[in-house]
Amino acid sequence: MWIFLLLSAGLFMGWSLGTNDAANAFGTAVATRVVKYRTAIIIIAIMVVLGALTLGHNNIDKLARIATNNEVSASIEDVEAALEAGTLADLRLKSALKAFIVFACAAVTVFVMSYLKFPVSANQSITGAVIGWGLCYADYSNPAVMKGNVTEILEFASTWLINPLGAAIISFAMVFIMKKFIEKRLTSMKNYDMIVKIGYLAAGAFSAFSIGQNSSASVTAFYYDSTGLGANLIYGNDGFFTGARITAIIGGVAIAVGVLTFSKRVMMTVGGSIAEISQVDGFMVIVASALTVLLMGKFMGIPVSTSQSVVGAVVGAGLVNGVKTVNFGVFKRIAIAWVSSPTAAGLLTYLVAIATKSYFA
Image (cartoon, rainbow, N blue to C red):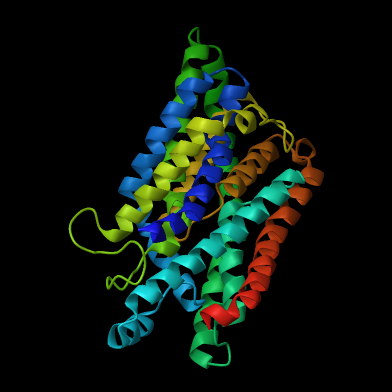
């Protein structure tokens, strides 16, 4: 079954997510030596898989739908036509190849921009790649297609503002309450260091859970067949381990492998370049970020950038101490990268789509 080798692009994206997003859960704690690196990665790996297992499937449907609308995944009409013509195997192969190309283009974008030291979002790059493919193949002259795609694109794009803004608001409120009513009493306690360590462990575990719930769908969703008729690599809707849940678990495991194998470099370089925050503020930022990601998944069903939520939460925490404590120059550079990464991924995928149109058309 060599066709399953096409899953490798998604698994590589999952590994990449794990190597980078681990820092969002425990970067501050490890860099300040509050928590040991080995302890951090074990907790992250376990909680990422648990998040993918329990809630990761909730984000599959919208990603699968935007993939179908943009001709990455097969629609039910495509499947029915293939069943009638006896070409389901060919359709399955082409769907897997499309997913491979989308993930590969997104991965190349993330790699190049990371090499150029631009902070990027893998989730946004994947969305941009899907849209780039659709610009070549989707029939935008059809009003129904136009309306569906524009609605989906705007919904996904809205999260790029709502996510960091929501994290900033939640973080600001939590840090303000902490400083106003709790922090002085907390820092005066004899066992303060142990409390901080427990706080970071709990916050990091919660954040890792949210990463599994949020990002596992982005890794493998385009290999999932929502029709249940077998047009893509993973399908089935019966029992606890439905096709959607299996899809999310595979993504979660890929992320966990990235955490366990190559996350130390990124995790150890996490610093306070965006805003000046205290040790106590640090784990409040992690909690606020994770809570935002979970809420976005719950109410919008869309994977969002955990990096964006962390940045937003850091800015919110910094603003509690005053506007001057926030480095808006760094924030501006990060915001530019948030726009450029999906744009670059979409352009690259669009060019590849044009080059391969004779095969897929």
